[in-house]
Length: 177
Image 1 (cartoon, one colour):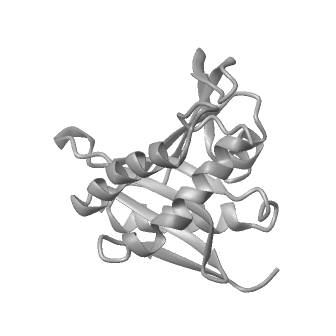
Image 2 (tube, rainbow, N blue to C red):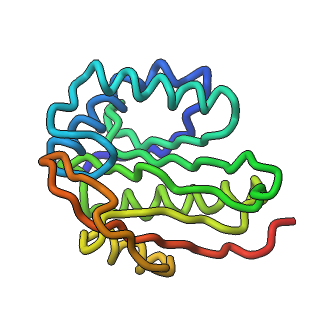
Image 3 (tube, rainbow, N blue to C red):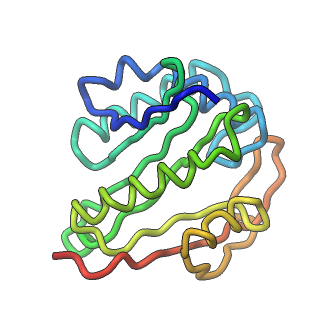
């Protein structure tokens, strides 16, 4: 595998990474990832979704990282910083995606490590996420010491229309400063 580079995407660099983020998201949905979109998900829907991501980056409520190889986006993750006055200690891990051609090379671990460091820098001591119950992602998050809180039945719909439970995980990073 060629050299990869982890990069934080900000408001100024978002346009540069947008085409790669579209392709990454399309690849994830094509391969059955339950990330909020159905099988008819297309480039126009990806562009619309990424416009909301860009707005959240611009208002500093969302952090986004990508891993690139040969200037192609092959992985990404988002950290949504809670903006509520009583929730400034928490953040939600969202849309950890690794391109189907780049899986099992440690990119997810690299992204999650970077995300956790940034969470600490933003004084977020509690991270939480959801993932499809029974999916390989559960073992991945458990290996990173996330604690399974439970599951919600029929919470998410896979791209093919099948409902399945969602597992809820959290990780305490320590008390924010």
